[in-house]
Image 1 (cartoon, rainbow, N blue to C red):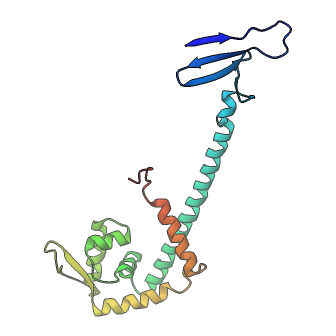
Image 2 (image 1 turned 180 degrees about the vertical axis):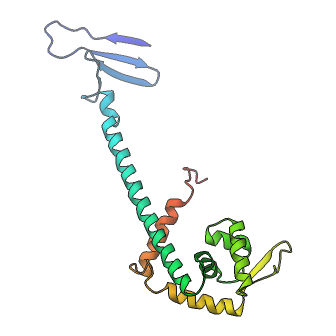
Image 3 (image 1 turned 45 degrees about the vertical axis):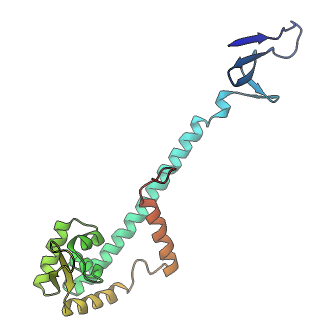
Amino acid sequence: MHVSRLPRSPAAATPTICIKFEPFKLQLFGSDGFARLGGMTTSPQAQAPTLAHAQAQAQAQAVAERQLCGLVNGLAQRIAEHVRARAATLGLTASQATALREMSGPMTMRELAERMSCEPSNTTFVVDKLEKQQLVERRPHPTDRRAKHLVLTADGTALRERLLGLLAVDSPLSALTPDEQGVLHGLLEQAVAPHQDASGT
């Protein structure tokens, strides 16, 4: 590194400027320690976000997360209470009603568990109860010998239709139009999706 200094007169009104040469870099420094570029004086502290700004951003993010968590949890609780109340009028538990609601067609136990957002063992317990009530049947899977297909019986299909009708009345989502429900679904799906890096992996 080579440093050349410009002479400074004792009576000079401006600070001394020295030129600092480094490989592939040219910087100008004044005697006051600040870098000068293009006639402008900047400090390293001014070039980076201040600590106060970073703290304000973190605080705002914390508040947003708290508020959104409260709204999402509140909506989930209202939907759960709605399902529980409607299920009780049909002599079903909330879990049984949820299983019937999600059985839009033949499916495996694992598929039903995913729709119900619960463990397969819990789903098996619920299906056992529905099977005893002759609302669901286990049938051989058409392509997988190791799996069983869950199929609604005629009574199960009729009860499911009644349940869907009850759930549609005064639904917690009824305040939103179908389009608004679609937007909400898309935003929540985007929020819970695994984060991807710049390469898309």
